[in-house]
Amino acid sequence: MTMSAVLPLAFVMIAGPQIVSAFFLATRSDWGKTSLAYLAGAAIAITAVVSLAYLIARGATSAAGPAEASTVGRVIDVIVLALVLVLMAHVYLTRHTSKPPKWMSHLQQARPRFAFMLGLALLGLFPTDIISSITVGLHVARHGGAWWQCLPFVALTLLLLALPAIGVAVLGGRAERLLPRIRDWMTQKSWVVSEIVLVFFALITIKSLITG
Image 1 (tube, one colour):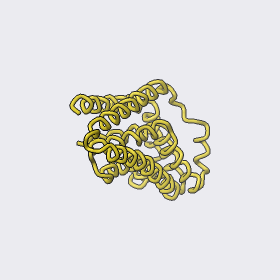
Image 2 (cartoon, helix red, strand yellow):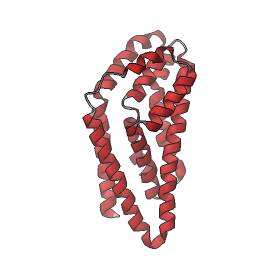
Image 3 (cartoon, helix red, strand yellow):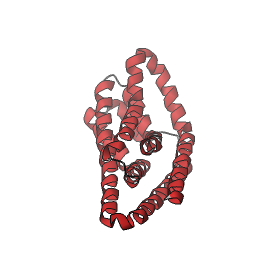
Image 4 (cartoon, helix red, strand yellow):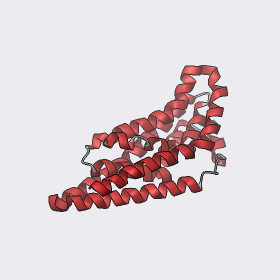
């Protein structure tokens, strides 16, 4: 249940400039190099934040000992729930910010190094991504999961980010017409799916708080 519970948060991770940037990079002539560099930066950022949160939570649980493990678990649940509520508020308040930032226009001329740094920044410093990654690490550790159980979440997030590039590889020239339409839909409607995912995860966390 631990892995399946956190997997939907991968959609929250990519909803916004993260997936829009992937679309822009996938429509370049050298889309392969830049998209791969972007994914590499994203992989490092997500894995680092998730792992750090996991290690801190496991360390706190181990330091508390068996007698206080239940209390520490509840504290982690409260922190996770608070983070999810903050995410829900952020997603809702920014739902009408559908116009891509001006800096995205430069992605058409960006080099792989810039794409790599962009992946690091968006997936490692963007508020929704930091909170989502921390939430995943804390949740897996709180429920006694092994560190590797965080990796399917990382992999799914990267797969979602890779979809535009995969679309170009599969569809070829047709992707030039299709990808902008999908990008525009994601920009306008992704917040709805994000809120549904967050409500689902909040309910799971509340259940964990109640049942201990």
